[in-house]
Image (cartoon, rainbow, N blue to C red; front, side, top):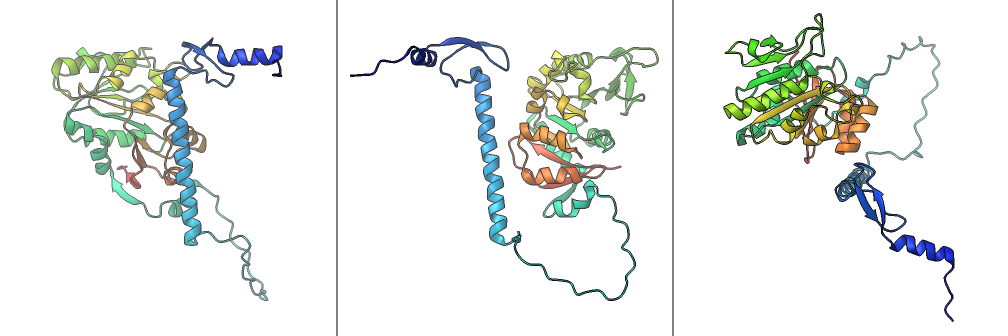
Length: 339
């Protein structure tokens, strides 16, 4: 005789088979779920979650394969191998000199084995490649303070493959950081100015918003049908207070829709944790200067860096950077910008 199910078992079965209302944990969109182990995610974010898991598995496979190759080639030495015993010293030796303080540069030669060097000109050709297709590019600069992000960006803009009208939002420091005309209103700029920096006056308490500059870049690109570069020197100025989302709708439009208009977007920040996901995802290239472990790990969770790139970034000196290309393996090149 078939055993009858208990009330508790019936309740569990009903919960597993009956659709019930829920909401996406990421965007809050309403949805219906079934089962006790269902993901509380909408179709879009579920696909992102599964894609991230798949990429993480592929990364782990690559790292495990690299470790296996090292073991087979005899690079790693077993811990149980006995080390030769040094002969006893009979002559009194002077004390050894004090050990220098360890730094990120101490492992630089080891971390850079097998890598090639290049100048900023090589980086310019890589970053601005979409211009040949009459499209705008999206590029970011990330790195600790004082490692050369602004200097590299200054030289990068000056070595562009094609002359482009450039609008710059620059108010992170007391003085302007870029050449060209510096004004509060576009109407005050000279007619022949190719680079225009829009910024307020801290002594007067005035400020120019990123939204104003981004909207102007889109307007000029649509009216002139010519390439335009939009530079946001400090991305944090365009974000919400928590740094999780963009506060500028025009900058969002420039990132997502401006490519076909020939609008290129260049941004920089020293805090990756305050770079919104949509900015990272839309950037086809990112120049990485020296970063601390927390910032590097945070980026790796989103971009899945190659293992050797993760080893090199902490050892980079002032003016040195590597380039991450979306969807491509690292080219194992360390670039150096002029001082």
